[in-house]
Image: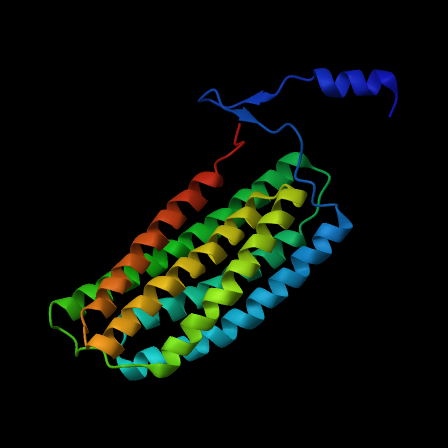
Length: 233
């Protein structure tokens, strides 16, 4: 890069949003080949693990009548959908900065909508159980096993995704990492609810855990939607 070009690059003023926030003046660095390979591998791992997790959690949740476990399984389904969105995002490489930012916002907002869907469903289901409109949830040893295993897998995936997202400068990948981190919190909450029901026969802990799942999903959905508005100058 020549001296004149360097001076032009470093002296260019940052773009300013309507609310006086500073936006990045460059497009996401999605051309990093090594980081992109990592993103593909992590996305494949997310799809594979969460497909298995969703199948086990939803089936065992239906059999046990567990609101928390079904909500956990639905979150895994959305994790798969989120990973598919990232696949779409990784295939949309363009030299046009505005085009890349539009693709980023669309991808992030699709992820946000998935959070809202989980929150709505689980809230209605949990409220129905607490009000006695549904049968009390039963014990689920298989549910306990899959949520405990998820507490090991999900934090590892989330940590690695955040590092790759930072290298790529991708808002969509950061939102996907946040969703994976949410799955870690959900695993802990659902495991607590299932354990309380299995060990102490506190059936009400299951729908209460489901409401916590819904609250976490709503928070992450709001944050993901907001991140889709970043640098929208």
